[in-house]
Amino acid sequence: MILILLLSVIVVLFVWNYYVHYGSRKGRLINRIPGPAPVFPIGGNVLEYQQSHGKCTSLIQALWKLLRYETDFYYPIVKIWCFFVPVVSIRHPDDLKIVLSPMKHLEKSAIYDILLSWFNTGLLTSAGDKWHARRKILTPAFHFNILRQFVDILIEEGEQMTKSLKDGKGAVEEDLIPFLSEYTLNAICGKLLRFVCPYICAFRSVLTPI
Image (cartoon, rainbow, N blue to C red; front, side, top):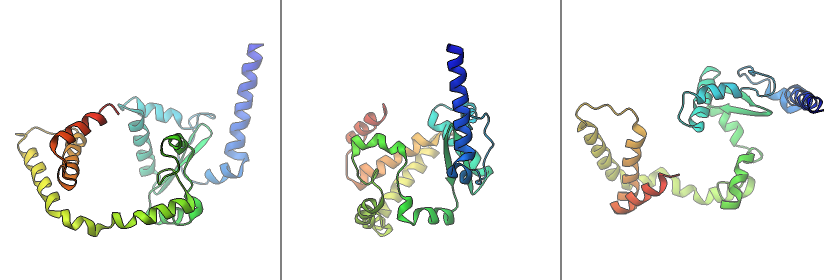
């Protein structure tokens, strides 16, 4: 009985996989996009992800490296399959403009639903007209002219960062992310926002567990 049930589940999965990939309109359109062939029928390219994860320290890093490799190889657009879910990555600015310009393409993916109970429908999770209206309000805050008054501060922090690298006495920084993060945080909190060092230290200690 258990064997029959397992075989039935496998058959259903294969039939559903065939429908998603080749029977549905969405699957047929996605398959026109270049990308690596699925490693095995149901899982798609998940095995490639697992192989990348073996060489990385985190799941996010593994996924990033896999997408980076595939997008470099199939530039400017690539698709991969994660079980029954297609993931499409585009990198060319002209393609991004076509996708992001129409309002109908601004719907967030299902993964953003996790954040709804926390953020509700704010700028991060909203879509369509509501997102456009909220983003339009914030647009002046992101204008590059605002940064002109902070040029001296950014130059000062850049010089201090360069001095710290030179004072390393030949030591090579293998991972620059923590090093750059420290000086970026110092430039933003310590100078631009006028927060003192204890706040920066407390802020960093809070983010470390996350």
